[in-house]
Amino acid sequence: MRRMENRFRKWLHNTVGECVTFDEPLSKHTSFRIGGPADVFFVPETIEQLSDVLKWAFENDIPYMILGGGTNVLFKDSGYAGIVICLIRGFKTIERLETPSDPATVRISAMSGVRTQTLCRYAIENGLGDMNFALGIPGTIGGAIAMNAGTAKGSMQDVLVAINVLDATFELRTIGKTQLRFDYRKLFWSNDEENDGTPSPIIVGGIFELTLDDPDKIRSEAENILKRRKQTQPSEPWNAGCFFKNPVSGKSAGELIDLAGLKGRRVGDAKISERHANFIINEKRASAADILALKDIVQKTVQKMFNVSLEPEVKIVG
Ligand code: EPU
Image (cartoon, rainbow, N blue to C red; front, side, top):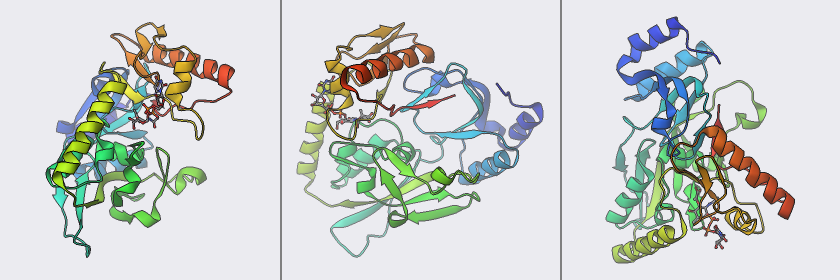
C-alpha cells in the first residue's frame, strides 16, 4: 500500500494542519465501526480549504475520497491509501432561500455536512412536507444526494431542484436538476462512463423545494414512519443500513435473504440481522474481512436458490 510521502505530509501540515490527522482509524468514522487507517483524514472547515487541498491532491496524483457520515461505506481492514475528506464540520448551514413564484413552496439550502435527520426535523418544524420520506435515513445530506438515498416513499431526486458542487476545476458551481441524471441509489456524473481522467464534482450542498402543508398532518405521518422503521429495522447500531440494493423487479433483497434462511448467519462477529435480513450487523469486533465473507455467502446462496445476483448498496472501499 502506498503511504503518504513526508513532503506531502509536510505540505498538509503547513497548509491545513489543524484540520488533518495522519493514519487515522476509519473505524472511528463509520457506522459499521470497521476500517483500517486512512493515510490522511481531512475535515475542512471552509470551501477554500477544501478546494485548495483538492487542487493540490489532483496535481500531485494523490487519491482522495469524500466521506459524509460514514453510514453507507465499508472500508477494508487495510484502510485507505490517500486522503479521506470528511465534510461534517464546516458544512452545516441550513438556510431558507427567497421563495420562488409559487407561494405554496419554500426553497431550502442545506450544506453537505448537515445530517439528513436534521433537515427532516427542520422541515417538520417549519410545516414543510416532502422530506418525511427520508426520516430515519442515517448520514449526511452530501452522502444522501450522492447516493440518491431514499425509501419506498421517495428519494432525494424528488425534492432537489439543484446541487452546489466544486466542479472539475474545483470552482463553486450550481447545477440545476434538469442537468442531473439520477437512478436508483445513484447520481451519475458525465465522466462516470467516459472515465476521461477529469475529477468528479464534489457535492457541497443541495437546494430543496418543499411544499407547505398542515403541520399536524406532517407530524403524525412522521411518527408513523419512524414507528414502522423501528419495528422493521434492527436496533443494533453498528451496521450500514441495507447492505444490498433491491433487485429491479421481484422480491426485495431482504425478503430473498430471509427466504434463503440466512437470518442469524454469522462470520466471526458479523451477523445477518434477525429482524431485517438485508442488514449486516457488527456485533462487536467484526473485521471488514468478516463482513465481506458474509456478503459472499449471501450472494452465492441467493444466486443458487433464486438465480438473482445481489449487488451491494454499501460502498466497499480499499
Ligand atoms: N422482508 C422480509 N424479510 C426481511 C426483510 C424484509 O420478508 O428480513 C420483506 C418485507 O416484509 C417487505 C419487503 O421485504 O415485504 C420489503 O421490506 P422493507 O419494507 O423493509 O423494505 P426494503 O426494500 O427492504 C427499503 C430500503 C430501506 C428503507 C426501507 C423502508 C433499499 C435497499 N432499502 O428496504 O433503506 O429504509 O425500504 O422504506 O432500497 C437503506 O437504504 O440503507 C435502507 C435501509
